Amino acid sequence: MKEKNLLGQFYTPRPVAEFMINWVLGEKGDDILDPAAGLGVFLLAGKKRRPNLRITAFEIDKQTCKNLSENCHFDFNLKNQDYLDSVLDEKFGAIICNPPYNKFQQIPKRKYYNKLFKENYGISLSGYSNLCVYFLIKSVNELKANGRCCYILPYEFLNTGYGETVKKYLLDLKIIKHIIKFDSRIKLFKDAITTSCILCLEKSDNGYIDFINVYDLDELEDFPKNATRLAIGEIDFKEKWLNYFNSEKRAYVCNNLVCLSSIAKVKRGIATGSNDFFVLSEEKIKAHNLNRSACVPCVTKSQNLNCCILTEEVFRRLAEKNKKMFLFDGTKALSKGDFDYIAYGESRGCDKAYLTSHRKPWYSLEKKDSAPILISVFNRGKLKIIRNEAKAKNLTAFHGLYFNGNVTEDYINIFYCYLITPAAREILKRHKREYGEGLDKFEPNDLNNAMVLDMKAVSQSDKEKILKIYGLLKADNNQSHIIELNEIFEKYIKT
Ligand SMILES: C[S@@+](CC[C@H](N)C(=O)[O-])C[C@H]1O[C@@H](n2cnc3c(N)ncnc32)[C@H](O)[C@@H]1O
Image (cartoon, rainbow, N blue to C red; front, top):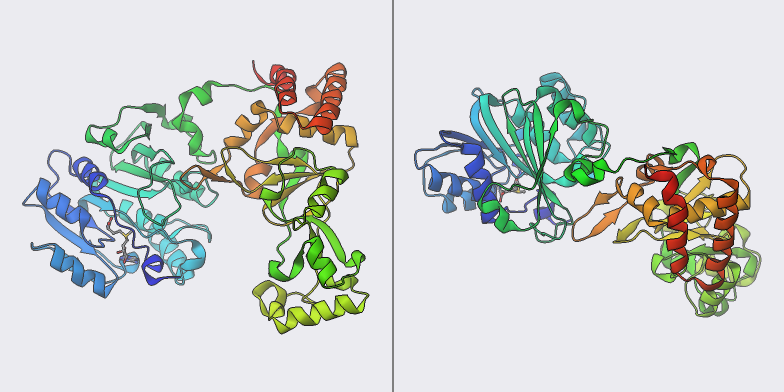
């Protein structure tokens, strides 16, 4: 990873910095702290707005500090050190920050910070926390009474597991005034795949939070108005706060829903550690003279599937088109071709990859049954949901949905028909993670925690109709059948 990215050096665009500075200084703010100053965009905007502003700034990187001093021709207190373990002997009327956004794997001092934060601020942060939330928690504790704090952050933390502790901490302090969410099409940071939000905090007893959508940067010229105001008591730290930004969605009350995990478990697909070696097309199987019983049918890529129902016939046609539809399972090696292929993999270092070097033997596959329903992990717009009649295995491009206990094929088909309806997708979408530029992701637990229609609510006569439609969909893959299915299921969900 480039050093720039390790330090989280993504600079705030000027209109956003000016909006944040205007809000955080308000009418009278005269002192400010920037815990991650970079090239000083906030300092310049602050001095412009209030020439007598007293500034304290942290920047860990020596060269960036030098550039910062050259950029800012005024006196300020610059500290070239790690903000997170610094000890400050004063509190501030205003704190503004665009912190580094580093995933937990990229925080070498994670354990040290976690211990420090437990001791200093009484918060046990999850080991999966993004670096930015450490900055936020420290800053909240360095505010004067009635002081304001404004942070720009990846919006993801409002919707992920590790964010729950942070949301609870901030809710208990009643410190959040506004959360401004940028539409996922607004790309604020070059090269960073993330949707951003601005947290506006004030150390006073706030009884409600405004959830504000911004669709265009021009809306920041005035304070954006597109808000949903919720009382603190209505806000649950365990919910994905994505749902609070749109009051219409909240008004859409659903009936007969149960948690998906009470019906099935969603699990990630097979990670091979060396797709070049394990993933096979027909041509490759023939070229290496591999024995068929060592070639396991598998969905390797989301792009390979444009159907709803993956029948054996559809699978066969894809394989004939030379799509990569098989995995090599070296533990089933029988022929000379198979053993030569294993040796060929070793000659190319495929046994030395992280996952293969930790697996015994390196050429075996993760043990996972084929899943009856597959759900794509990354999506632009629409989730791909596949009924896997062909009983193919799946790589990590899809999650597999496994039913709890024994269920009949009819039950699976009816449940599948429900999942592909717009009504079901709308409810599932509440659990998605937005990665910016329209890219959404579901982790297995996002889906496990999602709500779905309880099939027990569906009448016997409707179940028969649904199975007939399933048969038609299988025969012609015509999407108009999904509209018919939606009409049937929607009446059980909507009040
Ligand atoms: C996302 S950039 C933001 C810079 C600037 N405030 C802006 O908005 O354009 C974060 C900055 O924090 C610095 N940084 C990273 N870790 C830090 C730490 N532990 N203490 C202080 N600064 C840090 C990085 O070098 C980087 O310049």
